[in-house]
Length: 375
Image (cartoon, rainbow, N blue to C red; front, side, top):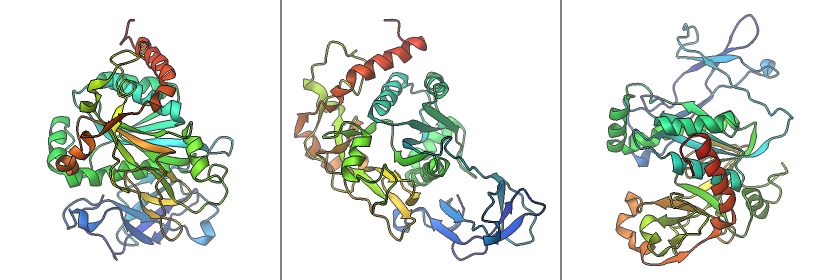
């Protein structure tokens, strides 16, 4: 995050290798991870950037241990960042990692729903879920620690940069009032998660804790990709950077007619909510995607900002194959005036029931282990 509109300026990278002297190179690219038409495009406000530090040809057989940024070639560095170079243990990538922006719950304990959401993801095919922690309540932290010990979740502490507030109560109010600032800061953990995991997973999926991509014609995420890009999971050449699922609402007020299955506890949220809107949001709006880690360069929460091979190509997955199930109390603010389009026509969608026995069983196992459920 940089507190200026930062283009065409001289900035240098100090690359520290396991050799006697560091190597100084000029930053070769500033990728602005935002669009100026979205707001906050002015000096003095923190802006998200991706900086590229090229490794000189004579050192390209080495991996830097760390790097520093300076504004003049002979400046003494005042910062140092460790270079993360994760590699798969057996040389083979796993399929899917889910990345979740900084969670800020304050005192709003959503432990049970968090457990169920995680268990849904694992049933669909997520190999790991990476969650950034801005401020998570004690019980939710216990939940995440439990899954972290099982190797299914990674929790990364997160703070706001620079002059932005990090006292929980102030932070929450600040980000509610500074919506564009909130969105700009979310870009950082999303891209951090991409670069931390690009060598370990074939696809990265950016999700919030009230949504997931649900296979319809397919049985799992792996089947979804096999249907839309048969060569992608095998590592063969394919032409797209991302494959995006269209958004469909499962709003709380739609669930009034529902009857639940006997074996599903009433406190389970996702597996009990089976009514959705008939109408999808517009193509390209509020989508979430499977992003190919070999192709995307920078990510927004809905689609890629930039890609490695000329331009990004992120087609919609046919809704007969998969869609994004989005569970909310109501429509997002931008759609409040049009929410009747979704509320007036609803239908049953019980696709999740294929997985509900496993989701319920595993959720109850976790709740019992943590002493949150005694049944």
